[in-house]
Image (tube, rainbow, N blue to C red; front, side):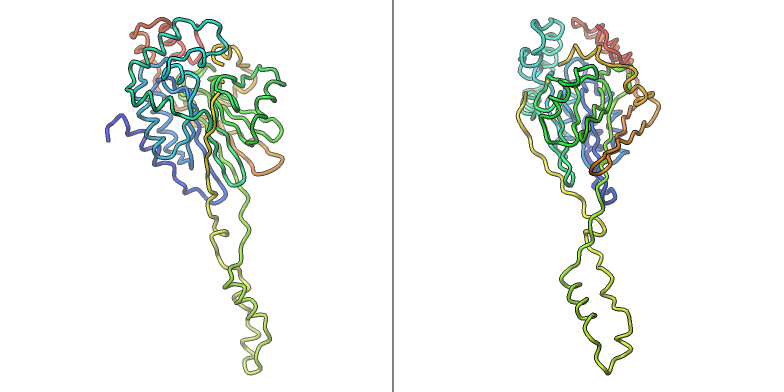
Length: 364
């Protein structure tokens, strides 16, 4: 295997299925934007976490300097069973359809077009075809819990869920699904919020952050499922009935002995058969520059303290159903070489892209 694919393969092998019964872990990342150094740092951290599933939330290649390497890593993850979806900028790169990728802009700026066209030229026809065929949404069923992976919000790749969005609009957008958990990207700001029974988690950007931390952002969701009820096998039932029958007169000692069959047999349900995970892809339909100013520093800054911290664990209390733990994580890497590579490329807007990568704040 080439070095280009090695990290993606190791993270794919880390999708273990070996967690204790009743616990299911999902690693979530997205908005990579062609930054393979950040992606590699996150995949290394994800490999150590040994999740049961990985979700990649789109916006894979545009803006950063290494689109080909990023697609190679993502395709390796996809082949191993990761849940990969398409972001709005993936539409811009794959098909150069800027109206669909940026519908909130009356006129798409030239620097956006230049970045998409450059990434398009770097990718092979097979990689472009891979991007255009990605689904807009994926669903992961964990026991009786449904997790929706989308880029912007349910049903949309361009309608995001920024912190300063009108609450009524937020509710309207998140109720376009029955999923209990929504994992989404697009705003490049790491956060989680609760809306009644629904939990919304945005892992932030793995390589093009807007929230002030240049580390490679990702999130780990842990769903604690109720312990399965013990079950009785047909053999156990027969043994119990036999033990309850009157003892024969010539065997009083046997009748006084406790029946072994009274102890329930150890079945898969007792030791915890893993919940099945199913997936269903749906149709497309998501915002991107306006969200740069949407971050309220008081509304979750503690959730991603610094790049050296392994994780900031916050448990989302759930009034009904299983507890869900959200960990917003940052994998440390050196953004300076990536920023220098973008600056040296010389496309319109690259000076600002480089500053964004270097500082973790949207610079324009």
